[in-house]
Length: 479
Image (cartoon, rainbow, N blue to C red; front, side):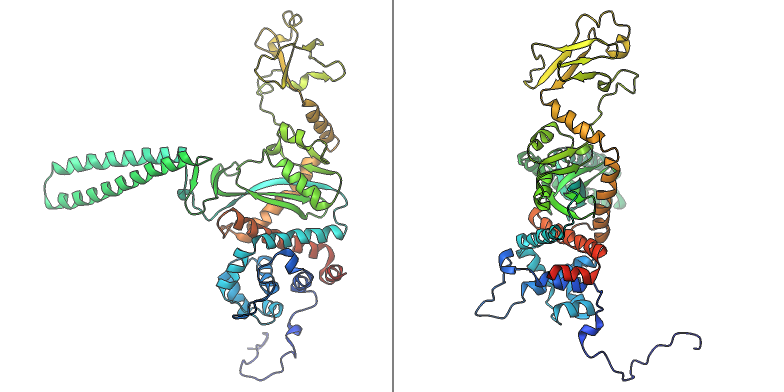
C-alpha cells in the first residue's frame, strides 16, 4: 500500500522506552497534578486513611485516590467505573498512580467519605493562587447557575404539581368510567376483554391517586412545601433562559475578573440569588486575602438588605437596579426623573417643584418615608404625565443612601456588566460542557458540594496551566 503511512507488525519485536516516565512528556498536565498533590498535608486536611491501620489489608494512600479523581475531572471522566477502567489502560493515569488500579467501589467510597477534605483541597489551591500574586486586582464577578440533579422532574413534587396531577388523574378516571359504561351496553367477547383492560387501568389510576393524596400531605408537612424522592435535597428551580423548570442545585461562583479563576463557590438549594450577595462577597474577600473587594453581579442579586449588610465589611457591591415600574412604557415620568437632594432631604420633580417628607408613614412600615407636595401638584401642567392621582407620592427607604452609593460606584464602571458577562458566564458553560446532559452524579447536598469542588479544582488547574505553562507552574508549586 504505497504512498500511505505504514503500520508496524504487532508480532515484530522492538525496543520499548526503558521506563514508564518516558511515555509522559515534560509538558503533560499530569505532572502538575502530581506536583500539587505531593505538596499537600493529608493529615491536616482531614483525609480518612492518611494514617495506615496496624492490622488488616493495606489501604490505598489518599494521594493515590486524589490523583485518580483529579485526573478524571480534568479529562471529563467523573464515573468511578470509568475511572477503574482508565486506571488499567490509560498510560497517563498508570504513570500518575504508579501502576495502582483500585476497583470502582474503592474509588467511589473515597469521594463519599472525604467530602470536607476534598473541599479543603479546593480551597488550598485558591491559597496557592493567592500566594502567586494572582489576586491583586480584588474585583470579582458573582453569578449563579442551576445544575441538574439526579432527581427527575417527575420525582419532584410541589403543591402545584400535586394539584395538577390529581386533576389529570381525576379526568382519566372519569374517561375510563365512561368507557366502562359504554362497554356494559355492548356485551360480546371483544367488549368483555376490553372491559377487563379498562378495570385494570382504573385500578392503577386509583392506586396512583392514593399515592398523590399521600404525597400531598407530605408536601404540606415539608418546611419548603417541596418533596424530592430520588435526591431529597434537590429542589425545583425556575430556569428563565429556557422557560422551563429544572430539579437540581444552584451553584454560586465568584470569579476573578483578571485571570478568570474561581476564588469562591458554594452550592445552595435556593432557586434565586437574592440572599447570596453577602456570603459570596465575604467568601471571596477571605479567599483573596484583601481588605476591600469589588463584587459585580446582575440584577438577580439586587436586594436592599443584602447591600446594607455589606456596608462596613469591605465588600463593595456593584449591582444594577431592577426596573419593575411600567411608567416609561406608558409615557409617564419614572422615579429617575425626580432628583433627590441629600442635604435638604427632598425631591425635585420635572416641573421644578419640591417634594418634602411627610410626618407619618402610612404604609405600616417603619423604614419607608413618603415625599409629596400637596400644593404644587393641583395646578401642575405635567400632572397627567406624572400621576393619575391628585398628588405625586414618592417612597424612599430609610437606608436608600447605600443604594445611591452603589449606583454611583456602578456609574464609574460603565463596562461593569460587560466584564461580568465575559468573566463568569463562560465558567458555567465550561463546567456544564464537561458533564454534558448529566450535570451531577451524586445525591444530597453535601455530596454535590464535594463533586462541584472537584470540578472547580480541575477548572482552576487548567486556568493556571494556561497562564503559567506546565514546568513554570510545577516550579512555583514546589517553591
